[in-house]
Length: 142
Length: 484
Image (tube, rainbow over all chains, first blue to last red; front, side):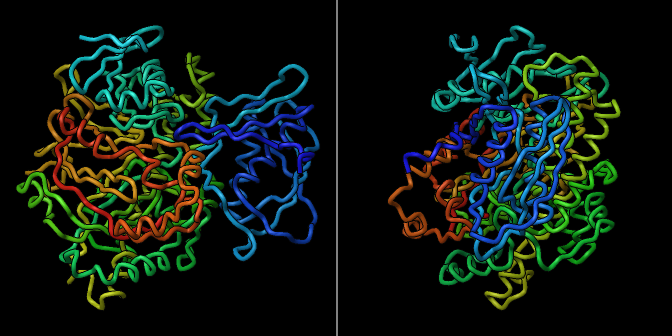
């Protein structure tokens, strides 16, 4: 158990819920942010792995890319009832993220919603390099 | 006169703190707080956020904060600000993600003793009839996009036209349940996708339906004027525009960030992105926001009908016979064109209320006929264990706060702290002991929403009453609650 690296850290103020993630590369920090986001929102029961789909999300700068990228999963959940069980970032350019996502239909019997997230915000949003690693800090509207 | 070193706050009287114009602020701020409430907020970012709002172009009057203020995104929660329609801006940060999150109150001709043996049954039936929880969907109402756009264009009127409620309901909703400058074409396909299955659903977090009763009357004449009496059974509904509104806000934050760059606005916070009211971006946001607001009005109207149907099921009587009438429906998160006196002249302004309630006085033309003598009812929900308040708007609110007052208790503990505080406690059982039957879609929500996690709403209500920006009419106590 002690060997499992921590994926993210929750940052909480009275009315805010946020999280911080880190990684060696930009790709890694995006991937960790997505995984942390899923962890905060859902507990997904075991099921068979299916084929991934490719997601492409655009944004004007790195912050916007990160917000839009995470918002994509809120949209998929709300509009289509899909949850994401796996994510692999393929590329990040100045204005686009491309990722492979493993999506599953949310299943009332085996899955659980943990937190009702309304939106991913720009409040105190940070993504950038600190020393040798990448860090991202994101606050959610609950 | 007392100076508070923090932000140079200057105490004006027991309930008013002036935040003097400094740095890039275009105007002063004014905070309605007593010392106890000030203690809660002096270390978060909400006072800075009041100052940040004062940076925005075309602000008219002061940047205001109601006593339930706390740190929000962009504006503080509890923030109110008005902007000139020609020189000013509109900002999604002044409305929030849950567009037209609001509260409505139903009264009845029933008294507490008549329902006390059926509370558990009522709560279970409400929970069964009203889809609740994070991704709650409405299985009985399939709207195609064409029909959904009609909802967005006409709000609660759509609901009534389709058999959900009566014309009389419409008379008792802020703006009669429809912002007529809405344009569904300004709403993205993605927002429509998110809203399609969510009309008539409660959602999660702090949203709820609460059965309660009037346990205290402060002013008999006012209470009578709005049809309330001691012991009377009441129902409060608190929800908003669901995923559709969240998506509209997100879409427009993206759009208005580009606009802020285009217009070269100097902004202290990205969440305060904005555009001139009459720019194409500003008009786009306002048209989309009004559409989402209409969705919320329709949503509360549908839930009201579910509440009436549930009472009919449980008591075997008609809703009319039980007197289940709408007292009023108020918006908590909204931007609207309103006419206000500024420097002695009546003029149109765009009022942003972010976690604040309109509180218009008696004889105001926007107040429904039924409340011309009392003033507009203001509904302030508390936490699920304690109490909620009914107030009315005042002349002083109209003069000092663009006719605005507080909206609720505000959190005291973070969600994590609430979980820690609730550890080892059976929240449902403890509330039952206090006489409140609670049912929630998720156990996590119930724990995060424990009464101790909130400020005592009485502290907030006392300040607005004493400061004169609303007047206390009645206090309601909960008997049964369903939480999202």
